[in-house]
Length: 172
Image 1 (cartoon, rainbow, N blue to C red):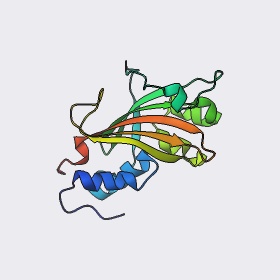
Image 2: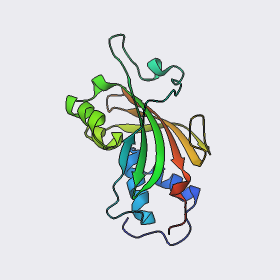
Image 3: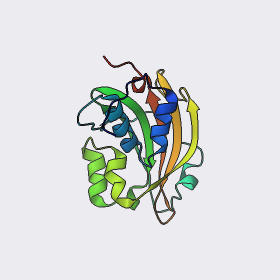
């Protein structure tokens, strides 16, 4: 979509954009374009210091982690055009990624969804609530929990995404 949104955006508009994509990054880039936040619309991930975020209940089971596998946590702020659009926690299984993917996640501002896109994952929504959930910023307008699943059915990642009020803020 190349045109910018002329009417005041609503949470329903934003949620519809998120639902169109398996990758939150692609959804945020579309939203950034629609809103005219940046040209070109490029979402970057700023890695945050490891937080004391509680592990999701049954994380090992949800991710299907074998006894010889580990998981990793990537806590990021996703931004476009200087606006922080999301704060996210991404628990994933590094052994299910390629070495270059793991390197990119460790050393770049590339969002998870962009890095692992070649794996052909699908998003499985677990829950969505209006407003903030635990650990989300106070200005959170929507919180999503989701799984990313590989084409063979193996879980790749468990996500908690806190979408900020910047997504609906009037443009200056």
